[in-house]
Amino acid sequence: MTIQRCARMLFLLMVIAAAPSFAATCESLSTLKLPDTTITSAQQVAAGAFVSPGMPLPPALVKNIPAFCRVQATLKPAKDSDIKIEVWMPVTGWNGKYRGQGNGGFAGDISYSTLAIAVSAGYASASTDTGHSGTPLDASWAKDHPDKIVDFGWRAIHEMTVQAKAIIAAFYGAGPKKSYFSACSNGGRQGLMEAQRFPEDYDGIIAGAPANYWTKVFATFIWDMQAMQATPESYIGANKIPAIANAVNAACDADDGVKDGVLNDPRECRFNAKTLACKGGDSHSCLTAPQVEALQKIYAGPRDAKGKLLYPGFLPGGEAGGGGWNTWISLGPGKDWQTIFATGFFNNMISVKDPVDLKTIKIETAVELADEQQAKTFNADSPDLKAFQARGGKLIIYHGWSDAALPPQATVSYYETVASFPGLHTPEFMRLYMVPGMQHCTGGPGATSFGQFVPAGDPQHDISMALEQWVEKGLAPEKIIATKFINDQERSEGIKMTRPLCPYPTAAKYKGSGDANDAVNFECVEGTAPIQLINDPAIKPPRALHTPEPEYSRIARKHGIQGNVVLSAVIGVDGLAHDVEIVQSLEPSLDANAIEALKKWKFAPATRNGKPIALRMNLELNFRLHN
Ligand SMILES: [Ca+2]
Image (cartoon, rainbow, N blue to C red; front, side, top):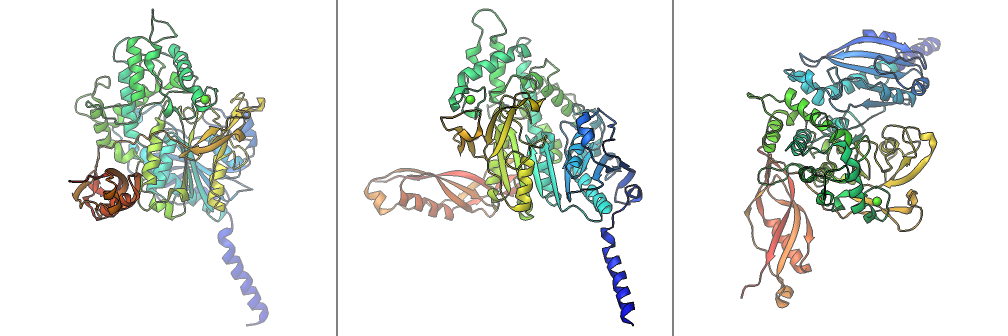
């Protein structure tokens, strides 16, 4: 072989080796074969020329959209599946990343606005209707369609992600280097579902106000509806909301050091609904006795016949305004969104022999029915994020303290269950930001813009950029600066205030001097409010089988020290105590002896739905001197 021929061969080989990086044309993707997938259209859309088939997009948003390849496909992973997806890919300037979009409420639509924002910023992106067509408030499609319920519950987002990555790889000749998911509400639940069930799908996930204890959330809606409709006089209409908001602020606003209409941590607020009781006749500025009772129940949260808490209630603060109680709780009997969601879920996704009356069903029965039939499909409450942690995934959760749709304390509880799960090191891969004065996902009296929907420019102000910096550069997010605009609809009018969002368990505290509208005058300090952990009736606590007593120390005996040491420990599936920590100390030598004794204890481990699980719990060891 001559040298020349050899060189030619080498050149040919190089061309062949380089072939996979040759991009396909957009139109040629219509013949792409993927499992359970029919590509219905693949067309290039010129810059600024996209016309939304649904609600028109704001012209300013459309103008920014670059030329992109629009792929529409229908996925059919199960017999009755009909999952529509769209994948949008910028023709030039792709940043090498993929962004999956989520859905609020009962979904039912492709989210064109979020796709537009993503491609405008250089991402390839995908959105799905999750397998049915309808408004986010409509669940009628679900009746007698178990496959479609599963698609909506978890399958559609996963299938969308897998097929979108394949389509991206076919178009550009290489798949995405990094994949991200960011969504709120039901979308937050979708994000946690991905982290728990399909940890390989995303490198970074933002789960906003997650509806991840789905079945319990819907039972909570029923509880509120029953509280509001207990008697014809119980319903608290929108006309009374300003009075409640004012009374709450009068009682608690100043407690955090700044009178700004925002409660930094509403768990600290001891607002008594009775202070609003009408003294003379009924008026907009007071509550009747049945209304006081309704308000107390909504704060207290759903409880069984014995008074045991089934799920955290809603918190005082941020009631006023369009995204607050007016929409979710007080829009009118049968009209408020909590009632609409509860009715949609129970009428269409729960099957019962005899029709149930949601106005009278026992709340524990509602929880039981929902758990039995739909917990497996909908609840994204597993704290076991070991696979997600191991693959280097990063998770950021946020939740507004003034959320009137999904009780914020449930998200704190979820964070705590993950933080105490054996084998997980949450600082490495998870952050929670509780947002003071934020209603559902956005809006409210607090500083509520931090890049969760509209890009905010830099990782210090933009939660998505903070996540990407964490994934790509290993720089973990600390505080994030949130902004309150003078007019949240028209940002060009200027900034009203900035506030830090602090990584839980820290919270923002005013330093005591300086402009309270400037984030620099706040610091992140450890919060002190008690945590309300969710009771899961499916969990049976560990049972102690063998409990050798702790030894007295000579010094403690000499000084006659008696009392209790409280320890916190994870009782593993092996029936032994791990990660033992002191919760309440008595005396150093006795503390040490208590830990030693506990390590010898043997337990029947906790179970969840009959399967052994590890569970962190508090244990009390007594030291009593006998004569
Ligand atoms: Ca305040």
